[in-house]
Image (cartoon, rainbow, N blue to C red):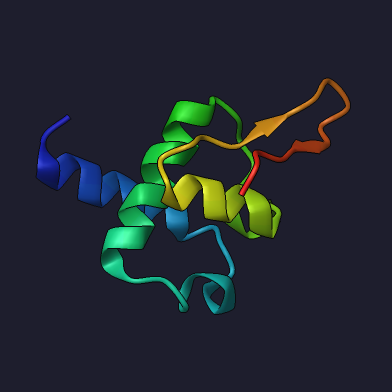
Amino acid sequence: MTGMEFLRNMVRAFDGCREDVLDRFTVEELIAIRRAWLASGWEFYPDQWSDAQIDAALRGIPPKWDDNEQPIEEDR
């Protein structure tokens, strides 16, 4: 995926999220969240993630969930 393709993909994906959740992040942070989201393999939108999952995503750690779709939180 080219950089432009990634940006278009990111905008389409984030279009389904609540903007009040996303407004607090910089462009660079949104890119990190999108990369973590893609790496997670799950369809949960970032506005459904726990604060710990978002913090981890900002550090490059994809969010995880258990078999009951409950968040598995990484150490902060």
